[in-house]
Image 1 (cartoon, rainbow, N blue to C red):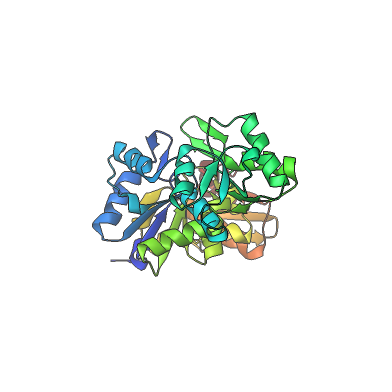
Image 2 (cartoon, one colour):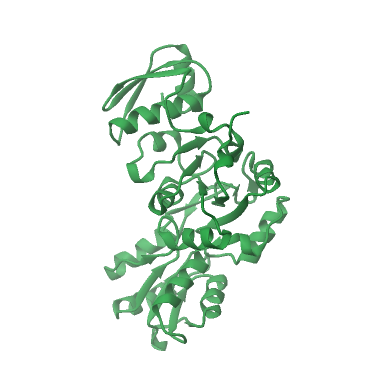
Length: 331
């Protein structure tokens, strides 16, 4: 029996939004795939850039889908952001919190004093997504940052995938403050290392695998941390995005959904495929063959990435290729 992707790893780091679920709906194949990971005895860590929910709320959200999880299995960007502050500031330092109660609790839990106004003389600002933020709160944060306060952003996700579509994420709001202050924050969440390092350490893992749907956070984070990755096509990024990805955002494996964890390694690796041939180079490729469309995508990525990055035109040499490209929205 061929070795599966999971066989080579002692922990799986799973992004949540767009990978395990989209808003209130489980992603296709997610439940059975994660249950099988648990059955195999491999550690699971839910690694999310969402800073608005405490670990307990994430556990409850997963339970609503029928997934059992423990709080220790959840690593959030709120936790990572608070940890970055605690490493850099003395205990009791005042931190202006631009975010949800969950972020306030993480800051307070590490011995720092959460505040909401510039007049309270904060020495740092920490920012995470929260739907109830107001202009006035952004104004207070901008004043503090301009006065020299350390600025930590829990994550830089520009969008948030939901069952309704893509909504503005924390990164979009980070851009607001960047424009208002001419400053750049330290980022705790993916693709930076603090969040992933905490998750790997908590699992005691030596061979972790990162799984996610976003090239600029999940996959770039894995590349940055030097760990292999699996990209699933249940969230933000598309086959076109993947094909044209820059080197620092390229996954080692690609699957339709989390069931790819249990597929043979050769079936999900980005590499040449026996049933597909790719000719050409530079900005134009020609695909020929028949079979699984995702196999065609893996073959195209292998060819494109060997030649460069950026926009590329793909032509079909036969009916099988035309069908695959249509399925992948690459025609």
